[in-house]
Length: 215
Image (cartoon, rainbow, N blue to C red):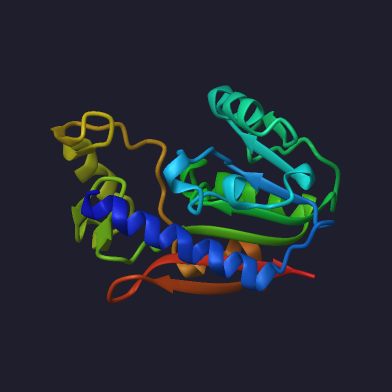
């Protein structure tokens, strides 16, 4: 197992541990997993859709039919739908908890991120949303050091020149980074209002920010 794979698994486990500690779900809790994906069999402790014990009360949404189809096949008791996180197909306060892990940085610009946050808070009574920390000095999507300290969205310009390709498993010249926008604590507060921002640290500083809010 590579260094980044081990790091990712530790981080995901800690986020899930915090989720169960703070949200305290039970058999009647209605959960929505925004951006849900099925984890491999050897990583059942890394994705909520795998680890959650009361799947009949879980709904899942992903913008890609590939992922929702896989969820239906693996967990037929889960209500899995293909939809955009910026326009969720459920009524107001339909869920006790909305969970989303590392999705909001992929929905578009700041206005798109605000739309997703608004939808999460609309359909959920409580929410638990995670995203990478913009100011951590290593960008894990691009696997480049210090580029996140550049002003504005300059880190994306660096990624378009040279970055890690996860499909090929190596660094390449040129990358489509258009679907990535990292967020700061200040931006998260502007999206989620008075929600609590909890940092999660695996190394020397917080790599992940978690938004916890609601009733």
